Amino acid sequence: MVSKEQEQINKDEIIKDGYNDPTSEKVLTKKDLNHMVWRSLFLQASFNYERMQAGGWLYSILPGLKKIHKDKDDLKAATLDHMQFFNTHPFLITFVQSIILAMEEAKENRSAIRGIKVALMGPLGGIGDALFWLTLLPITGGIAASLATEGNIMGPILFLLAFNAVHFGLRFFLMHYGYKKGTAAISSLKEGTKKISRAASIVGISVVAALIASYVNFKLDWTIQAGEIPVNIQTEVLDSIMPALLPLVYTVFCYWLLKKGRSPLTLIGVTLVIGIAGSLLGIV
Amino acid sequence: MLVEAILIGLWAGIAGIDQFNGLTHLHRPIVAGAVIGLILGDLQTGLIAGATLELVWAGMVPLAGAQPPNVVIGGVIGTAFAVLVGQEPQTAVGIAVPFAVAAQAIITLLFTAYSPIMHKMDQYVLKGNLKAIDRLNYLGPVILFVFFFIISFLPIYFGAEKAAEFVSLMPEWLTNGLTVAGGIMPAVGFAMLMKIMFKWTYAPFFAIGFVAIAYLQLPILAVAIIAVAIAAYDFSFGGGSPKVKTANAGVADEEDYSDGI
Image (cartoon, each protein chain N blue to C red):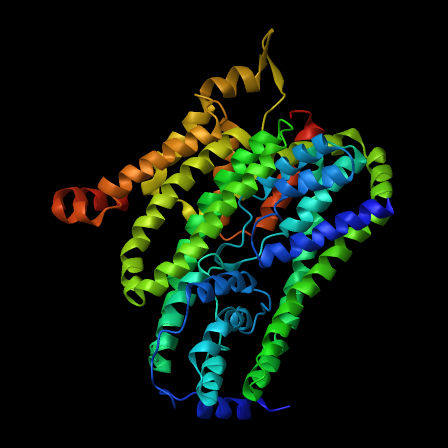
C-alpha cells in the first residue's frame, strides 16, 4: 500500500504536460463514439464521496484513450489524469466526453484538457437540472400519472417511451455534435445556456403550477353553523374564493419553509401531523 | 408469498441499478406500480398507487446532488403494501416514506464506503491494468442490486401480513389522517421543484399553468403544449433572446426594473 503523500509525488511525475508521442491523428470512428455513449450509462457506477464520478468517467472514455495514446507512458498519464475528482450532470456527460476526446486526439496539453473538463462540469450541472429534473420528468411523469390514475396501462409505457426518446436522443446528439465541433462547441454552449435554461424554466414552472392544481389533494370537510344556516367551508367559502386555493397556499407555505432552510423531511413530518390533526378534529 | 417477494426483490434490484446507472427511469414509481401490480395480480391498484407515489416523488429528485428519500424503495414498498394490505394508495405513502428515508441513509454509507476503490483504481492505472478499471466499475451496480434486493425482499416477505394486521388495528382517525396527509404530500415535492426553479420573473407562467387547471380544467398535456409554445416564442423574440435586448435597450431596462421588485 502506497501512502497518500507518496502517491501524490508519483502522480506529478507521471502526468507531464506534453507527450512522448505528440503526433495527432483522427483515429476515432462513429462506431467508437457510439460505443462510448453506451459506456456513459455507467458514469456513476463507482460513485463515492471522495472523487464522485471519477472512476465511471475514466471508464466511459477508456476505449477512446486506448486508441488515441499508443505510447504507454502517454496512456498512463492520461488515465491517471482522468482519475481525478469529477462530477457533472449524468444526462449531459456525452457532451464532456466528446470535447475531451477531441482534445485528447489533437494532443492538447494535459493542463488544457484538465482546465476544460473542470470548466464544463459546473454549468452542465445547472442546465441538466433545468432540462431533466424540472421539465422533462414533471411533464412526462405528470401526464403518465393522470393516465395511470384511471387505471390505464399506457401511463407507464408512454412515460418510458417519451422520457427515453429525449434522453437517448440527447446523449447521442451531444456526443456527435461536440466531437464534430470540438472546443468551438463550448462557446455555443455558453451562449445557449441562459436561453435554454429560461425556456426550460418557463415550461417547467407552468407544468408544476398545473400539477399543484390537479394533484395536491387538500380539501376540508367542515360545516359550521352561521346562525341557523349550515355553511360548508370548502364548497361555499374556499371554492368561491378560488378553486384549488388550499393546495396553492400549502405548496407556497412549503416553498417558504424550504427557502428558510428547513429540510424536506421536516415538511413530510409537518404534513403527516396536519393530516392526523385534521382527522382528529374532524375537519378533513 | 415467497415467489412474489423474490420477484419484487429482483425488480427493486434492477430499479436500484437504473437509479444511478442507465437512468432510463424504469425505477420511477409510475413503472414500479404497474410491474408490482402485475406480480401481485392486481394491476389496477398497482397503477393507481404507482401514480400517487410518482406525484409524491415528482419533486424529490437529486437536485444539485442532494439525495432525497429513496424513490425506488418508496415506489416498491408503497405499491406492494397498497396492494397487499388493501389500503388507499394515499395511506401507502405514509407507510413508504419511512422506508425510503432509511434506505437513503444506507446508500449514503455505501457511497462513503466506496471511496477506497478510487485508490485501488489509481494503482491499477499505474500498473497499466486497464481491464481492472472496467471490472471495478461493474462492481458498483452489482452491490446496488444486492442491496436493493435485500431491503425490498425482507419487509415484503416478513412484513406484509404483519403490516395488514397492524393496519386493521389502527384507529380510524389515524388511517384517515394518513390518507389525508398522503393526498397533500405531493405539495412537498412541488415546493422542492419551485425552490430551484421559481423566480419572480416566471410568476406569470406559474399563473397561466395554475389557472389552466383550477379554472379551465384542461388536461396536463394541454398545459405543457401551451407552455412550450410560450417558451418557443420567448426563446426567439422575448426576454430569452439577447438580440432583442440589445436592439431595444429601453425594453431591457424596463425588464431589469421589474426584476428588482
